[in-house]
Length: 151
Ligand code: HEC
Image 1 (tube, helix red, strand yellow):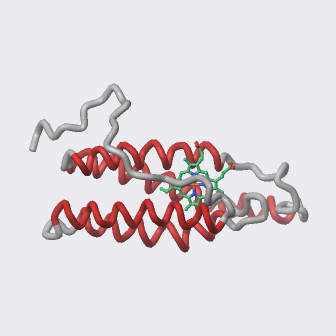
Image 2 (cartoon, rainbow, N blue to C red):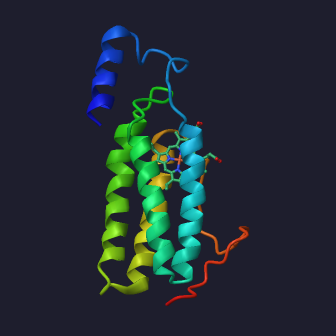
Image 3 (cartoon, rainbow, N blue to C red):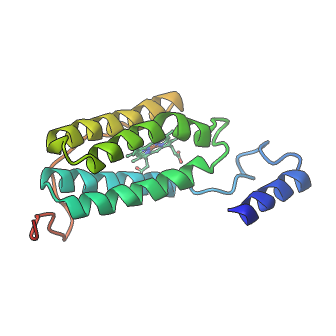
């Protein structure tokens, strides 16, 4: 963390035009977004199956992807990191709270997941990618069972 901070300070000092061009941006936003979609889809299937272990697992993967996205300063002039922090992080925290708070039950977890997906789409609109519209689905195209075999 500290070395990354020092590294980015150094990079900013050495390269005064660090954010001037998209070519100079060293990030993989499209890869992270693919992961967001992949893990959100699997999380959706895990919620539908009421599989707590898988919900925890995929929520954690989304959290890691979210953290990596907050480190992206800009994409096409849009402050992707700040927007992720402001729009997606609060929705994710609320989702996580619903998962941790076992009294709320699966209905609350499902509601919070809807809000998480809404946050994805709100950020797509904020970055002028509103045409990328994430929607929930119960289709399982994976060679994986989401069933709760060890309840
Ligand atoms: C910072 C705001 C922001 C947030 C939050 C955000 N996205 Fe994105 N998303 C973008 C931008 C910008 C692009 C276009 C990236 C590009 O052109 O490289 C994108 C592209 C995508 C794509 C197209 C890439 C592909 O593989 O088809 C998908 C899918 C996607 N996002 C899913 C999600 C999901 C799911 C979430 C929520 C869990 C999410 N995004 C949250 C800004 C955001």
